[in-house]
Length: 94
Image 1 (cartoon, one colour):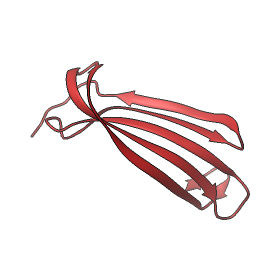
Image 2 (image 1 turned 135 degrees about the horizontal axis):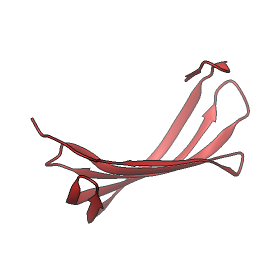
Image 3 (image 1 turned 60 degrees about the horizontal axis):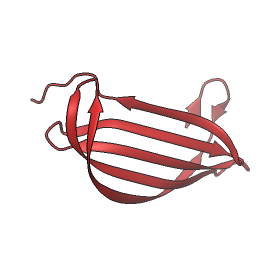
């Protein structure tokens, strides 16, 4: 990973992925029947002591050919680090 303010650093990510099942999800682009997928695990820097955990969830819709929603929470050194997500606003299948 390259961060212009701090230089380059190397990180290893490890996840266990689980297909939870079908769920109805509502996002700005509409209401969908989505396959929920969770990925939990951690990461650690190869060049330093920092390590953390990651918990992610994705809602994938085959008809849209991509996820329509995702959420990710990360901790580093046992403290909350980042929490982010995104939802599909509009789409066009080609």
